[in-house]
Length: 60
Image 1 (cartoon, rainbow, N blue to C red):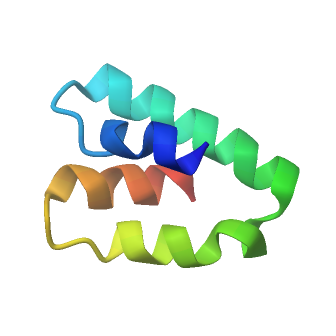
Image 2 (cartoon, helix red, strand yellow):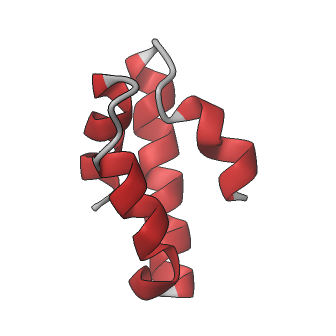
């Protein structure tokens, strides 16, 4: 699931990023936050784009 949704984290369209953040939040609540904590940490500390960091914060 993460591999499928990963490109949408830094998508130029804000609607796509918001939908992705909501979907990741649902997955995190189902699996438990510790299961995806390393992924969230990497996204929130991304140097690639501000959109990725912004989406990571929205997931939290």
